[in-house]
Length: 246
Length: 271
Ligand SMILES: Nc1ncnc2c1ncn2[C@@H]1O[C@H](COP(=O)(O)OP(=O)(O)O)[C@@H](O)[C@H]1O
Ligand SMILES: [Mg+2]
Image (tube, rainbow over all chains, first blue to last red; front, top):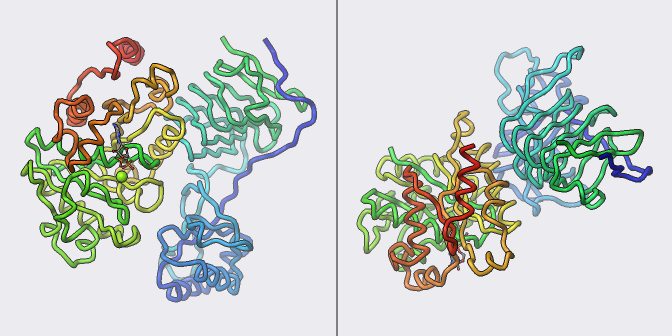
């Protein structure tokens, strides 16, 4: 049983992940800025060309102080692309957007003349070992537990297998195919870095959104006959096809 | 060393405070030393449900800020002398709780009590994450409705990421407590089914507490329902939940049903 899930006109959206430096300031801010200047002096150009996310969780400052901090960073040529952990009252129009869902990765190596570690720097990216540039073999990860609401799994390098369900309000973004041995209730984007042959498999389709190579479908556009079934989805041209499994 | 339990949910009004008091009093009736800790700074309630609101002198914020010693802030229950309350402050906001201060208080409480039961505020912000930070186990309080289930799912994700145990690479024990289960609405089919909630959250169930006016009556007289009316349906369900929390293995029954569904659920699990 093969069904056409989309009409032919589709908008393409793609997920892509970038490695960002996360700066987590401490109070008092003026002392922290001195430390930052010190770090910058010892490793010239560290921030040049790097996306920087400002993590202000647990930082007791208000909107005015946050604004001043962003300006202080701009004076140092540190351009903030997003703010993590801010209370809504701290943000205003014109500030970098709020971000969430960042996941820790290995610390950046800071090249410096002085061997003192730069403890204020963390970075944010998928939680996995560094992937070598050449990818002759297909990469894959297996996750042995359910993906909970609010969590996201981002794996641009290849396939993602989840032994468990993908909850409403969670997302999985894979460069390759996505296999879900459980219910798919959240969002899944397969082939997200341009792979039209990627597929999505799940034991129970109740997805909020699915996408393959940027072609996407919302819940209400899906054939009601497929809901609750074990389904595989793939792309033919610009059309997402689906069929029930078993 | 005692066990630290966080009672949490994401969503407000689902029965966290009621459950903290009821489980605390149920465990204390097993002759274990219990303290219930209110983390809902600014919106404290646990003192009312425990009937101790007129006896609050110092609170957790005073202890953290060094204005009072821990024993000065602990309030002994009038009915059970091995049950204590550490109240929250009503006049401060949750920023008065510092991570270091909470860590010290938790370490001290674990030394003196078998059970440290933390009543979490609603939400997923600082107050809730501080309440769960030092927990060994979590009781995830959920009502059988979509928004509550999704919020619980979010909280379970946080429990697996933001607790000390998780950061040390260990697993925090998580238990589902389904509360405010309305037998009439269940019969009419306008609540999520127990098995659907279990399927979505996929953590073990330690009890189903029926919606009951006994709970309101107990809170009006300022007593945990497991002390106010130990023979009432919600109290019995809380007693059983407390036994499961302590590691006993008991069959679970759905309020208003003979057995039915649960044979199926456990059958499937075993398969
Ligand atoms: N099983 C129950 N039956 C009836 N009312 C309940 C039950 N559990 C809780 N309630 C009521 O619901 C309201 C919210 O409960 P509470 O324990 O304060 O929730 P939370 O701490 O999660 O905000 C209170 O008025 C309480 O008396
Ligand atoms: Mg409460």
